Length: 171
Image (cartoon, rainbow, N blue to C red; front, side, top):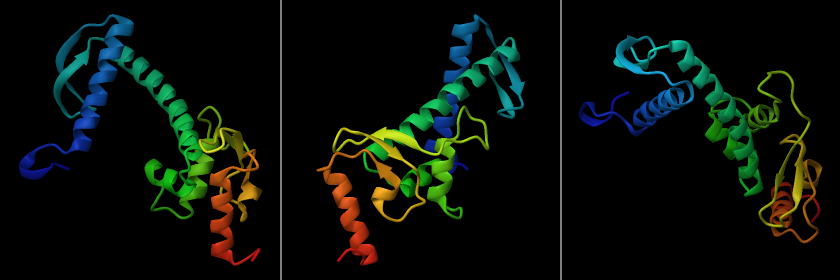
């Protein structure tokens, strides 16, 4: 989708920049030259590597690194206090049923192999600095799904207080 008066949107510019970065990495890694050619990926003439297989190699490596970083940054976001629903929004699951569950399952997948997932993920809580084990958005009470917070963790205490307020239990 084009922006105002045919200008590219910020999202389009980011995609183009990512493609340029992958092409530059492939040139650096594999020593290939560039030429102007029509490509199926862009449906236009543009700079491409002399050997498209090297471009594929670079893309696969970048995808593997990005996948690992996606998981790490999602765990960092949980450690910083963002909910699974908020992580789901960034991952593109917000419009699906149970987006927070989809986000957890996506992050818990091992090695990018669908159907093989961990039962938990872990992250460092930025409030208490402890390593927390998170079993996902499946339980009700915060202590049922997160273990490892320090006894006096302000974040965890706030989550429990919000749960008590929301459910009316424990009053």
